[in-house]
Structures are given as structure tokens and as C-alpha cells.
Image (cartoon, rainbow, N blue to C red):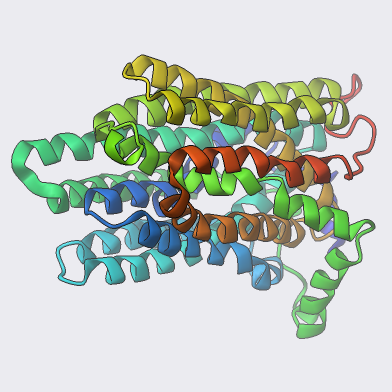
Length: 435
């Protein structure tokens, strides 16, 4: 057992390393490669004329590293510190981003860029294991609840940086007669440089909690590796836990892949016909700012009343606003501000609802091997995102956007059902008066 990973263990730098000095930048950096792989790449491939079916299938498959990352998460527990893993993988991701840019001028750029994204996705998934483990080891339970909204917020700010700023930048560079290849290479250079700068800051500023140390050399063996896995699968109510992790985001997994194509596609094929710049403003900036506010409010609410009391309002907030996509597909509003306002409503609700999901994963992962167990939770979450996301483009191509968004509303039923079955301890996540 790794007794030293008790959540009560003190951070050796507590008092000099405020969570505000590293949680925001850690989760901003965690968001950048994920957003690029899962979302920004869809805009890039849409600009290059790749079909919805191919785009959703191949970018959807890139969830796989996040699905299978639990297979190597015990190695992060067993070898080196979470801090070292975090910083080292950040520098590798910066290099991988630059590598993706080199594939774009090549004749077979689609296949080669997807291969480069696979490399980046595997390194990014490894970074997530270590960064989440460092977060869990460095903060007390009530701090974890209070900062779950902050980490979600800065993760989403990475979305704004990518889907707002970088998408608009690519559009402007393209309009300046640089062409899409030049535009996206310049965007990737900026992204890689930003990643490198923040990685250097983390080398200096990340905390060094007492509990952050590898297993003793005598315990670095295959029996311990499998023991860490077995401990997770012996958790009470495992079937409900896995069902919730796989299905809570079932409708969002499909919606997420087609939201950007819907906003960019011409009205002739059922889309809204936005430009990259308009997309960056409406979805990448206004929408994600609303999502950020939802995440902050969600974290604050859980720290005040606990996850159990906050759960059902957050479940409703997660799924009901999907109606705005159905309304836009039916009415095709001509005003950019109507579109931006509708997206703000949907994203604000999603921010609230996803906060509850993140806190539930903290609950499930609690124990002596929380880094590996949290990674297993996120692996199942990624599986629940990957499979529906891969088929979503094919489904939309066959039934159209309007019917697709009707299906998204029907797809909320499994999510609500699983939310009704989970068990949450009274006051879990709530900051107690004497804390």
C-alpha cells in the first residue's frame, strides 16, 4: 500500500505555494493539447475540405489514448514523482505540437497529421495522469471541491484560447492570402511556443507535496501493478460507477463532434454558415466564457452544499440546454448574436453539469492509489466519449442536422437513468465550518 498518499498528508510547500499560483496554469496547459486534438483539429480539417464522416471517425478515434491510459497509470504511481512526470511530458507535448505543423504541407497530410496527433494524444494522456495526481496529493478535500471549478475554468480558457483566438487568427491569416497551410502552421507555432513558456514556469512553480513520491523499490513489480488495478475493480457498486462514467456524457459525446461542423456548414446542407472568425467569437469566446462561469458556479455550489444536494440541478443544467441546437437547426437564426446567446446558454449549463461529473470521479478515486484510480475513471469517461463520437459524423450525414439534434435529446435518457442510481455520501465535497 502506498500509505503516504493519504489525503491528509501535508504539502511541504503549503503556505508558500498557493493553489492559485499553479492550479490555473496546470489545467490551462492540460486543456491545450486535448482541445487541439479533439476540437481545433476539426476546424482545421473542415478548412481543408475533409468530410464530416472522415473527420469525426479519425479525430474521434484519437480518444483512445485517454481510454487506455489506465493501462500505464500504475507506472506513474510506481516510478518518479507526479511533479517530474508532469513537467517532462509538458516539454514533450510542446515538441509534438511543432511536429504536427511540419506534416501540413505534405501531399498525404491528412494521414500523416493524424499519426502525429496520435503521438501527441498519448503523451497528453500521460500528462493528465500525473497532473491530476499532483492536484489530488497537493490539496485537502474541501480545497479540491472549491478548486474543481477553477481547474475546469482554466481548462475551458484553453478552449477559448484555441477555439476563439487561434481559430480567428487562422481565418485572418488565410484571408491575407497566406493560404490554409500557412495559416495553420503559424497557429501551431504560436500554440507550441505558449506551451513551452508555461512548461518552463511549471518547472519552477509546481508544488512538492510530501506524499508525491514513487513506490519503494521493493514494491515496483508486476504484482503491485495488478494490485492497483484490482483495488479499483473491487469498489462497491462497480456496475453503477462504470455505467455513470460511460453514459453521463453520452449525448455530449455526439454533440461535441458535430457542433463545429454545424456552425461552419452552409445553410444549403443545414448548417449556420459561420466564418472561422464568427465561430471563434460565438462558440470559442462567448460560449466558452459562459461555460467557464458555469464551472466556477458549480465548484462554488458543491463546496457550499455538497455534491449530493447539487447533483440533480447540475444534471438538468447539463442536458436541457441542448435544446438550443435543435432550435438553431430548425430556425437558422441570421443574427450572430442570437447564435452566440444560444451557445452561451448551452455552454453555461454544460459547465455546471460537468463540474458534478468531475467531483464524482474524485469520490470514486478516493483511497491510497488515487492517481491511478482517477486515471481509470477518466479512461472510462474517454471511452464513453470516443465510441459515440466516432459514429456521430456518419449518423449526421445520413439523417441531417435537425434529426441529429432530436436524437441528441433522446440520448439524454441513459445519462439521467445512471445519475439516479449513483450513491453520494452526505456533504461530500462540502467545506465544513471547522475545515
